Image (cartoon, rainbow, N blue to C red; front, side):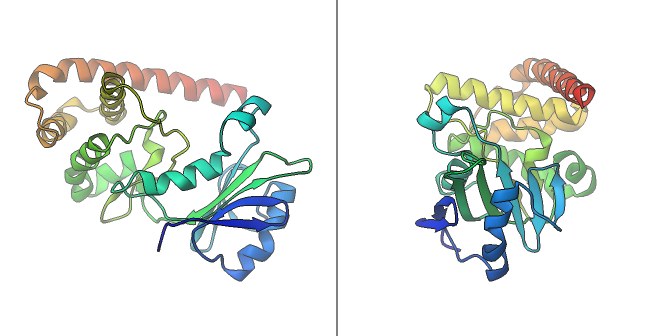
Length: 246
């Protein structure tokens, strides 16, 4: 599917389209935007992500008034990022819309291809190819400056043949080279900490460094492992706090 965008409007929604929507989704979308829900669909994340047939539908709550003035709507930014991050794989977008008026003004909606697959920790337990392909996926990301501010296990999906980045809202823009390198190290450290098995991950770290042309894998490993452990603990605390708040 081509990822060239064209202007697109539907009801109170204004945005961009990359492909034709199925007629039944196009007919239902204005009601989804008005009610902030996708009635009758499989809910993947409460009130924000649904599966509708071969597609995933995501609703982004309205950002603050200041962010609405200074940044594109999240759905539009995610859709436009798909072309920017090539050759890193991500679900192809169909439509991204921002609600332009009414009580839901500022909310935005993104429709992408639904990808069947397993998230990071589950995929690595069940598919040897997912294990072998992980260092190359991260090396490709970091070679092309694809940096994600919230790269947790749920945002990495193995579709049976390749890894895909499935949530682009947290992508970072252009930064100083040293800052980009620091974020890349933190992203890789977070994967190391998430997997919670240093002996399993250490060979993957060596391969990751080799692919990036870095010969410091052994020297760097203790720092990466410690940083990964701290990041994993921090994320665990964050999840616990969210669960406590309900």
